[in-house]
Image (cartoon, rainbow, N blue to C red; front, side, top):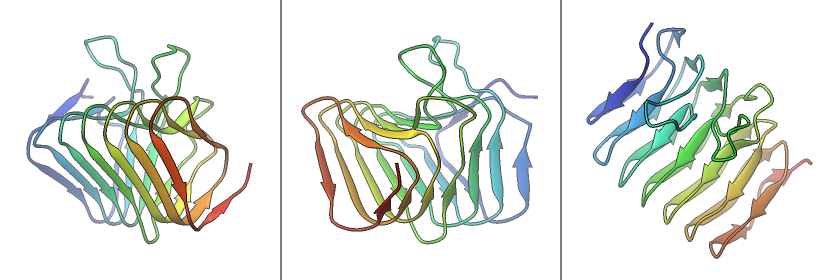
Length: 168
């Protein structure tokens, strides 16, 4: 069982199940995480720095989910009460498209948190029962897909919702 995967290249999941082997993915400035199929299940979340997140996208990192499922067994949050399945720190990019499924994060606060100046695009797929939260200066664009909880803006960033379905 790995504590944390520090990704500086590209991690691509195209099928099968990648589960129970790590507690977190730290997508560094040059890192790219792509999920096209199968299941990526991160078991607990947590970084040596004390951040408790499952997938932390840092700097100019990119997370793109076009198919398959991303599951979080324990989320992340600056509130230290459980929280985000995917968190965007810095100027990174998160894209949720096509048949992606960002699964329930077992009682955490946010399924996706945009914490700095990065951008989140939800163009399709399903985003699970935690909130989508913009708490920085970045933007969240929702043009498609299904959101199973609230979308909120807690800072100076922008929410742009032009399509999709929000069920809260």
